[in-house]
Length: 197
Image (cartoon, rainbow, N blue to C red; front, top):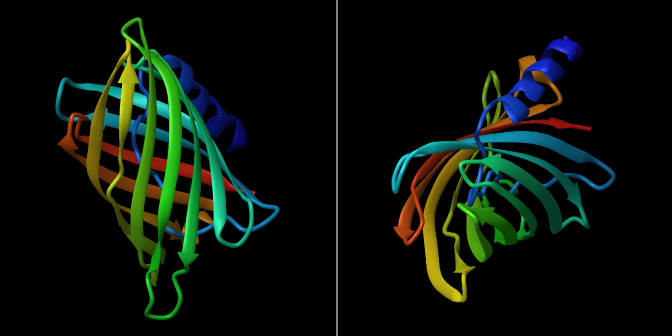
């Protein structure tokens, strides 16, 4: 099983020209202290050109309110590296949704042009239990600056998604997400599969 999964993940990362870029890819649920999450995030662009992207990431905890993520990828965009921090000062508790911010910075290369991106994303999410597992729908509105070749543009998305932890796949977390271009970006569909350890 592990060899088959490792072979599949290796094929996805090295065999396809894909990468996940400018996604949120997470809800307001937090990784606990001394635990990590390793994942893959495929993405399909559905506006402003087409193509696919794939990112690989690791998440960890700073404390109860802060998580971090380190991500890299390659594909239609030649390559990119992203560092992000998620701050959830209001956790998902009883009837109260999780409310917070996700900050990220990316460096990369696209069609022989280097670029940098800085974004802030207010986000809200609320989990609920079902017979098959826990689902956590979320929305986010990332806004930021894209800089390349001495110029910059303001970019923004409207993002809706959901994470799912299934009783049949303990230790794994899945997500699906749609990002809608609001300003000088692109629309996309993405998903994640990650392993919690």
